[in-house]
Length: 135
Image (cartoon, rainbow, N blue to C red; front, side, top):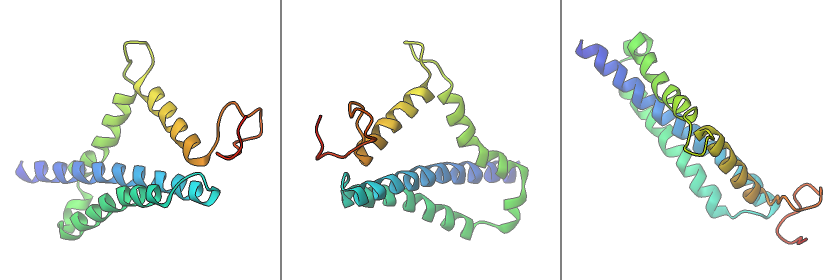
């Protein structure tokens, strides 16, 4: 029973680190594009890259010290899926105003992408012309 619990917890930890690593690396790509377009700073790229790299290194470290036999067990894989499934469930939850948490997250992410990439909505269809172009 203890082996099952240990495998599940290790999977849960790795699933959480994996989600965190993907999220940080996802934002580092947008930040890098923003730097290339002149609408973001290198500080944002470094912060995003670090937010993705640190949990990724934690995944590598945990897998490195872990017993290889544990990687193929069902409690481990159930644990790995635990954090993403929990986040998906929380994203489907309704807020008091009737919107879903996931909708708000996507809206906030879209706003952040627009800011990093220098796009703005009142541009008259020019497709995001950067900070230097004011309407």
